[in-house]
Length: 334
Image 1 (cartoon, rainbow, N blue to C red):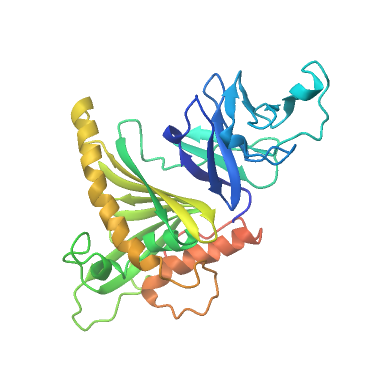
Image 2 (cartoon, rainbow, N blue to C red):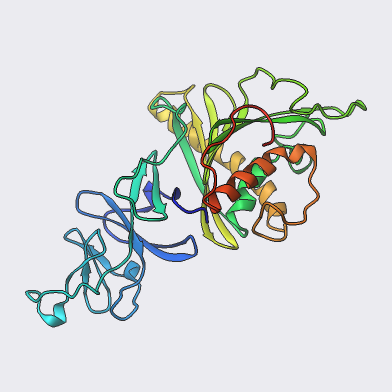
């Protein structure tokens, strides 16, 4: 995992007030729950007393209660009551559950995966998606590392083949560019162009400026992606890491061409089966890739069309190593 990052790990709708939710994320068992004000907490799903899962306990009075001996823990992970010792007795400091800094925004629950800090900036999101957009969503499990799922969404050359009867219909096999445009150190756009094979080699990113068109792909480290289809239509994905061999893809269809409440909800719902079908065309192939986790150097024989993959891997490796925090802006695979 890239350290010191906000990761989107759940949708807000998955965590209700009446019960805790246990999930595996980042290779750890976690429990998410809400206090009486609806504020969400994410902590390790492990009572330090006898190792019971807190996720099968209950939420009561703004605390999570262990199902085994009813130890109570507040949102900071501090144990506030041990019934067997008398509720009036002081609780030893050793009874502490690891709690993660948590932020809820844009319908996602984010956790901070890294070193504790006195002040944390809020998680980033796509600043061109405003309150006029509404969305439908789907939760889709994949049997591979989250880096493979991300790279699939940055890959242009596969589209006419994997999606020959859906979004790739009519796309040519030759990929010009793709142009990688760094918007800041941890966000880049991809501008791909596909065309028929007329014998000309692909245009290299440094041979011409990127085409002036609204369509582009947009990636924010560590795990958010947007397909900017038009000013009024977007596809957004969050790639929630489960462990080294599993990912949950949170897929959303955003639109603002229909704002009438009932029709808006219907359109958003009707759009999701097609988007999930397209994702499953990818999933069938991506789950076969080996190794499941990608690295900057892993023996693959890459081509010009893989420029966005190289850009992603290089920046990911820099962040993994705690290296340079600045990145040249402008076109190029980097």
